[in-house]
Image (cartoon, rainbow, N blue to C red; front, top):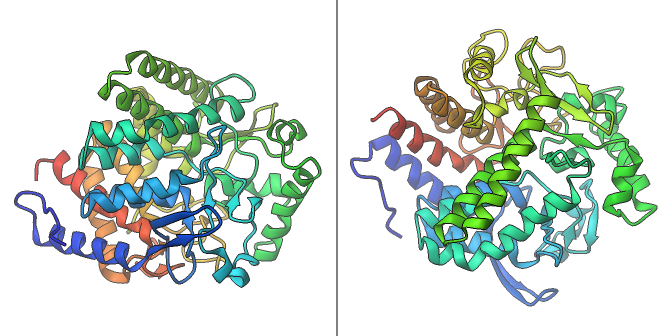
Length: 432
């Protein structure tokens, strides 16, 4: 396959895009699923440890693929959408070939809707993925094909996971955010020690009661023991409502576009009202109907920098945290927990407890985009270049030590290929 290099692409850009293409092909999964009668074609997170299809991984993968093989990005999203439920829900994991990996599946802490589909959501960047694939591929033709399903998913979020009418979506267990073991969950999970067994026990304390009423969404929320407006999830939701509105406009659905913009406005206003802390200059998650603040300084507190509607004062306060060498401006930024938090660990905890300090490429991508939007393309360029160094040093890993570049977690990790988009947008932002 001939990769469509940008005009005047540098040697580094060409190297990176070739590596992205190789990783995506290495992790590509194709076959026929008898259980739903579909010829699937997707790229798993890592053929070594995660051979199935994860929702937000697939969205990052599709965006990366749009730069090297846009057809692969289309197939990724179509496989993701194949088993959407009639109410619009899309599972966070599709176990296409589960029968071949039964032993592996038995180790996962996952709630199932049926044998092959999970009963959980993940951060909703589907519209962004569709937009990238359409922009670099068939445009309005592709949008028209998938938009009804895409809108169905965001309607599910609005009707099922917006229980208090404030426009913010709520997650009902930590893994729905994708940042399973973040220290910000400890009080809600009742964590006493930092071990996999303890976190699994905490997950069960939250999720086992849901089984008593077959995980009915309304009743799960009524339990009021883990109903969280996660700042990262809602930032991504708001951003994607804007993108969804744009997709609607591109094919002439102006009224629909206005509806999604209105929802984005309401959700943003609630995010500021409920989650912004003026004294700290950070956003914090709120939990349950009481909107109790979860005051742990993690990268998610920075995430609303992504949003164009964030006012300058708040943006500058967040940027001050990013460039603070005691918090987030590590040698290889941006660590997933502030370095001056007591729970910060730069490498790993009990081998697989994640999001407790290491740097991740996907969060760097979002925060760099926010820096560009709020007038600091120079800082975004540094993050992109440092992320490139991580890949050069340790390959496409799940996450990295922010001091040493050492990679941890799954090898050949597909969503780290989002660096392709990060690298290209920072070059475009500063004109190089």
